[in-house]
Length: 285
Length: 226
View: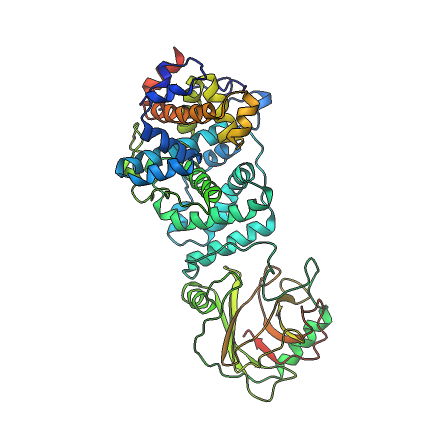
């Protein structure tokens, strides 16, 4: 390899490159991301262990120089992006996101939530009413099975739910009970939630399939420690009445959840629920 | 033409912990370096690899701005930046176990993965040779190994000293290419040199930097002062 430390003369003659090993030059091009298709094909044809070593070394060199030249003021990434990345990372560590995918901001954030930028919470008097309602409700038994429902980002909810249950040390797991407007056919299942991970899942068995063009389900998280108003846990659909596992997407940080309630709302969900149709409730002991 | 780097950084003996000596105009020098220096002995990637959920947020706290800034600078278009940053961190969670504290600073490792992902995004759609696996970085150790970790400051100081030794053309091209993320065609226009020469200066410069940075620190210090 040519040592330019001993040859600092300035010059514009590309023929100087002839002094360099052609292979090394191609690897430098790879580390810099400037390979042409032909060069890339040439590199691929004879790829060997020495190439691998030198390529990593050159990548490391480029990264070090990148840092060394950086005098700019660091910019903070958007908070929504940061939160997405943290969620992805925590899922990855839980073991359920080995196939983690990029979630684009332009995509619906979760479960068909259509109203963005609004405070999707109901008034203080309403959560009190919800809790009062819940106090009179019997506890239903859950039935356990699995399915292949997906996170919006393509991750299997049953896998990530199992990972959360296995790894979370602060897991809250409560069964669904009838709400103030229960269905005739018994719906069972449960809610799992981890405060440290700020993640959770709803599992429903025998839940009626909804027509998203007419109505959608919406989860509310009652958390008096956080706020006087319930937290919007996301709008969602059920397409399989056998069993569905739905990821909870709380719009705010949950501190101490006291109850989870499912309402039936107009497509896209609502900011404030009238609670006219509240078929399911899960009370945290 | 870039400003002389030596004015901001001096080459310190390896056994001495270097510190920033920034002129007023360079007061924002290398915030990412400062961030790691402040928590020099607490790398976060091993915690990620060990499954420590709190490490994810710590990693974002420490390196989020670095990755975001690099992605903004090196992405082909602003609309791609957020996707690129997510890809970088997904890759970091996956490769956290490959980070070897003996082979370089955590910041450099993360900058390397960031650059690799950004380059991969530019190459996407083409059938190209993949970047090599990082599972055996020890096969290409730094030439100045020490029992303790090779600290970021040492790497940066050495990089700057070596960068100063490059020809002016290579310095200019690498400054515009690596740091600013400007395409070779734009660099050719800006510097008024042929496109082929831009590529040549960039590659030659990088190879020379690697060669220089792999030398023992003591030898480098001596040369730098001559």
